[in-house]
Image 1 (tube, rainbow over the protein chains, first blue to last red):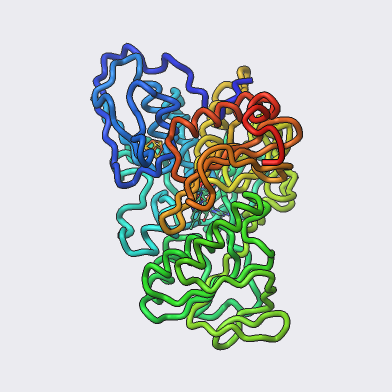
Image 2 (cartoon, rainbow over the protein chains, first blue to last red):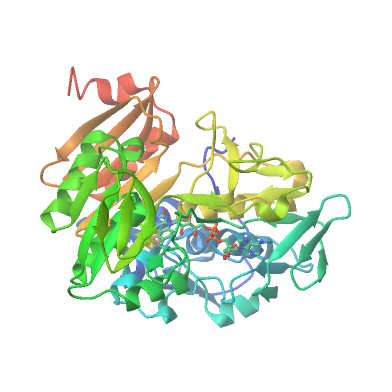
Length: 84
Length: 391
Ligand SMILES: Cc1cc2nc3c(=O)[nH]c(=O)nc-3n(C[C@H](O)[C@H](O)[C@H](O)COP(=O)(O)OP(=O)(O)OC[C@H]3O[C@@H](n4cnc5c(N)ncnc54)[C@H](O)[C@@H]3O)c2cc1C
Ligand code: SF4
């Protein structure tokens, strides 16, 4: 049992040679922390109010699966991923 | 996917993201692209956002999913043996796998058919109510659950006079405990809401709402926020088990190849060892994702075992909660101060940490306690030392 709802399966989409750009719509963020739990290298939360802080706008390929997962899970639909 | 909202969309996206290339149909009876509901009782009702802020995905991102969208048409029946969903326009949609994500609808009161009676579930509901609120307007909100409380707070912000009617002695006590319920009641008092607890509403009447003792609470507009009913009517007679929602197993399956997700689904959560139906935004997404994976990989199915999460905004109080708080045996405030409305409370069920609820606390502290919930930490180890007795 994974113990978690989503539990991203790491490795998907890796190495396809895609570049990824992450956009966050900060005013939409509700400070849930879901993205930080899934992709702590890419997202953090403001200590004060828990609002998202984007650490890495162009994450490395090995982080892509987790970032996509964060974008789907974000309860405020505040994370958008653009892949080229 | 039947139900074109958070859970249905998450299932569709996950199927595509994880390699499913076949046909995908998303059926929804609302005429809109999938949109987000939590802002309806917050930024939309308050007028800070216009409807263009609520779609869950841009048209381009939706397009990229290659979905057949059947919006504005309801599913009316399910033929399990024949593997088809019948639609209101007479079309029958065949399927190999089915995700049922039809959500819930508001429970109603007698007499609430008129134009001054509102519910708050859809974008149209929110816009209709917003049109009628403003300085000096009198709003009666029936039910001080999260929805009613949020709407009351926003209506105050718009200058309306608000009466909040709640049958229980303390609002939200079963959900968050008495002390925190009282703290929230205090926030309403401070903001000039006329909160009346222990009152039973009989009906929406001319000029307001009628209590069971005959009293008329005068109001220009009435918002009925007394809970919800799962949208399972279209599944009656299908052979699926319907109780409080669509009954599912720990994989969130209702029948072979048929899964339930989101507000409509009641499933067995093995992490807490109990069946639950969760009406939270994040659960809708996570369950949609989980069922997509189980559909896609029938040989590697995983139980759906999340730590539920919700937030609620009332005035300047943002509540964040992780875990399963309902039916808890004990609440302990372990950090901060309830009076200052900055605190962290943990919940015990049996001998385990069942949940954490925080207001205005640093995110790291909250995540640490969430971890205690996720690992089903023993209460004695996690809290016992902090709180020797009677706190
Ligand atoms: C005003 C409001 C505020 C909220 N605030 C919060 C909050 O702050 N925090 C939080 O965690 N949660 C909140 N929620 C709860 C959250 O929005 C829900 O948990 C979430 O929307 C559930 O998603 P869902 O996809 O399961 O169901 P729904 O969003 O209900 O979507 C189901 C869809 O299926 C459609 N449908 C129903 N029957 C049929 C049929 N027979 N055929 C076709 N389509 C059908 C419905 O019309 C609807 O479009 C709020 C909800 C509301 C209404
Ligand atoms: S998941 Fe979304 S709402 Fe939650 S902290 Fe991250 S950006 Fe904000």
